[in-house]
Image (tube, rainbow, N blue to C red; front, side):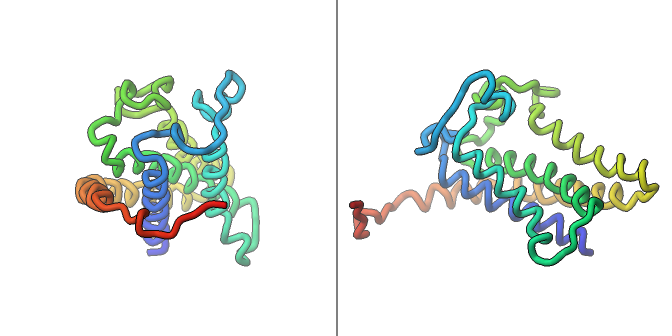
Length: 203
């Protein structure tokens, strides 16, 4: 039962962070129009998989690493086994976090394709549907429990990861089915803007 709650929690956090980014970026992905520093050259781009390095993404990418280590700061003893257990969860998370941005962003309905997403355009796309930036973390997330099994002869990590992936797949399917309701709400909330009624000022 714990693995079910854990997997659902991962999905909910990914959904919330994706929605925060949609509210922040709108249709201008990869912080294109945000007031953040932007660096793009051969060396910078290698850090982010052929994408520019931005101040926004530098800090945003730190956030899930901290989230997935929060239990150590809250009293759970650290061990190498506990640390290794973090990373299969993390690598699944970063894939769905990014994908949920496209799934829930009304500007990208039906546009999850290499030729429609400039910051994934330089990726290798497998079967025309899965960018390398997604496939590689999935492979790592699957490989880590297998490696642990070969060392410890304990297959609990493999079973947990299989369950986790199944629940994530189910949640993602449900989110896909409800995406248009979110799109409608997104547009509805933008029909009225009350900033002119607010005492906003800058010194």
